[in-house]
Image 1: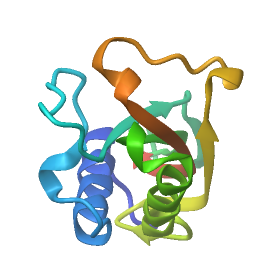
Image 2: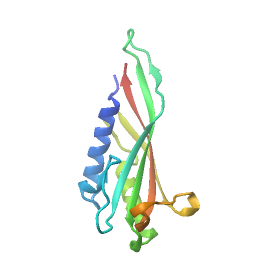
Image 3: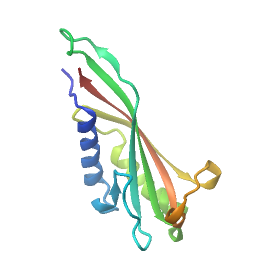
Length: 149
């Protein structure tokens, strides 16, 4: 039987990986919740958002509740650095975040590609409020996790 987990378990695995591998930032600058305050003076941080798609059966078990489902996901990592640092620095931090997840596998979670790209107003990315003081690089990580149910 392959490693399996739940959505809660997958999030915990991804959080642990981020905290262990993203060394350019302290753990308190890795944000997984929408309710947080930006620092008084601009400092780099990453906001993570996991989007799941409906699961599909990839293996049949011995009865009801024993089938193996695979959930395809995308982890979007919005890497923000102070505007005065420049867009190249946002990309450098983004590449560091991408390296943490690219080709990573643990506990039923399999990460594949991790693609960084700088976001600008040309992409329709228009920050509001205090976020105008930041440059942003989006790192998109494709992954899946398996669950028995």
